[in-house]
Image (cartoon, rainbow, N blue to C red; front, top):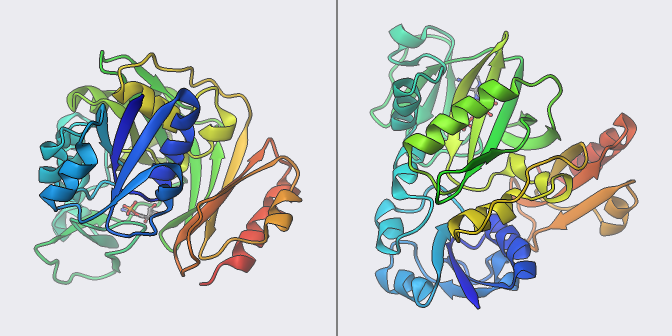
Amino acid sequence: MTLVACIGGGQLGRMLGLAGLPLGLRFRFLDPSSDACAREVGELVVGGYDDPAALDDLARGADVVTYEFENVPVEAAVRVGALPPAAALEHGQDRLREKELFRSLGIPTARFGTLDETGLPAVAKTRRLGYDGKGQRRLDRVGPIADDELAEELVRFERELSIVGVRSREGETRFWPVAENIHREGILRVTRAPARDAPQDDAEAICASLLDELGYVGVLAVELFEVGDGLLANELAPRVHNTGHWTIDGSATSQFENHLRAILGLPLGSTETRERCVMINLIGAAPGLDELLALPHARVHLYGKEPRAGRKVGHVTLLDPDEETVVRAVALADAADLA
Ligand code: AMP
């Protein structure tokens, strides 16, 4: 039996497990919380991400070690030889290094650096450990920027898009269609995929250059701003990504399955679209299952997490929906939200 070990036991780990079980894979997760929601699809080692003994317990007998969030300590990933390679984590964890990587590869980004370089209005973001819009503040006038912050121009984008790609151990790459994403309070709410009239080739070129530069193995996501007819790269995520959840129901091979195929040295699967999808995140608390299942062509994914404000507790993917169904589903999600 092939054993996949994963640093982190949240919903992304759980969905990796759900994708791998039909392939006969077994899973083990490391998480500081004894009720981490991936425990239902594999063994759970409870321990800190920086605890060498816990990391060794995680990796013992595993065929491969991966991770499901980008703030894994780099030393931990190196200790267990995790894939994707640690270089991706090093860039993904620091917004300044990330932006410098984009720049060095000729990938356009929002202007960043000092307020002279960005102009006003700007956004100050903490360099490390920011996620879901946390650690961000808008600047409308010149003011101090802390050492651990990065200033960026405030981009007046037309749309937020993302591209998810996968690279095999041999360097073969595949990409899913660009998705369009709607955030509120910094949290992803809705993904529509494939995005209408999206610059697929440009997005793939950005993702491909990052995959190759980082000697990447596994799934990588890049968040993009569409401005005019161009793209600016905002952020990379060296892992399976919320804007790729639609691929479970909408694609020939999901991001989760292809991540597993890549890190295990198995052939990559087709990323062809089977169905246009709208994915709606369930934040805070989930609506009743009866209400969700009453939505036409809804695929429901609940993560088995206790309700809490701002927490991602599930998602629902609507297959080729009409707009009325999308509006109903968003209203259901909003009504259940604890915020
Ligand atoms: P991030 O943590 O960088 O993914 O930012 C979270 C969200 O904040 C993004 O999805 C955008 O909606 C918004 N945002 C981030 N950076 C900028 C920017 N430079 N200009 C405008 N909006 C931004």
